[in-house]
Image (cartoon, helix red, strand yellow):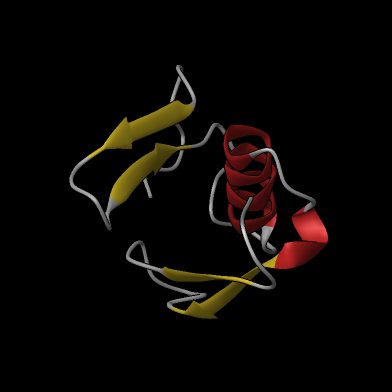
Length: 70
């Protein structure tokens, strides 16, 4: 995750890795919140199905998706 970006979005690295650019700074969880919003929109699933399972305070994160993806 890259914070403070002028152009938020998603860059595909490989089949399991994406780089997400967010506008928010890593302050009081705002960047993590924006990360979940961007991924939710990209994947077309509810934000409640996404969870940061590792790396909550790091730039590298593991995101868990609850349930099945159609």
